[in-house]
Length: 276
Image 1 (cartoon, one colour):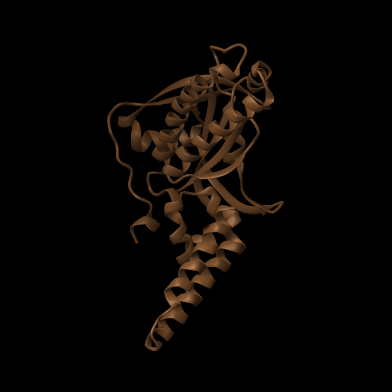
Image 2 (cartoon, one colour; image 1 turned 135 degrees about the vertical axis):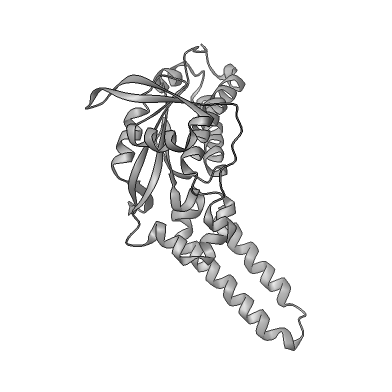
């Protein structure tokens, strides 16, 4: 709906601009109309794959920079990225505590909208909602040189968002669980964007381990070893990291690192596409 509205608004704008224009504006008007048509075609062909997954601030860059689009849609889309998996711990029990299915749906819709905003505001990419959480990526080509900090900042904010939304919806549940929250896993490595079942998604080893590490206790964000090494080398002054053991599927007990942001402020560098 929103993408169709964008196309229609753009075309109506071109119509208004062309009405009453003097003949010497004809060439410029035609060029502008072609540009609008080109943008609309890109939107229809590729928008559903990319635009809804990213910040609106990136849309113009995706329209105008084919190199940036190729990172998502080209045949060689492999790139280095931080992967973040968010899991609502005890989600099945949470659903059972809901007074009605409609109230639970409203809670989940509000939560997912806020989590998406948190990720997109930090120039992450929302890969997909999983029913009881979501998967997001922070590729260095898109999120910028401080993609790692943006990932752990998003994780920090996600925990706050869950606490706020759950408090707002207490009346939706027959029993309010005290030990409920998000488990968040973060890993780093090479991923690829691929079109699967009509959607754009990420594949790669970091996806697997970020997902497995999201089995962390409610309220915790944990890093896998590669993510820890990258983040520790750049942001140790801005976050604390503590070794912890975690039981994960198919692996047994593994070493992970619980990460928390410190109050010390840090301003991450802007993504390259935002500064050009």
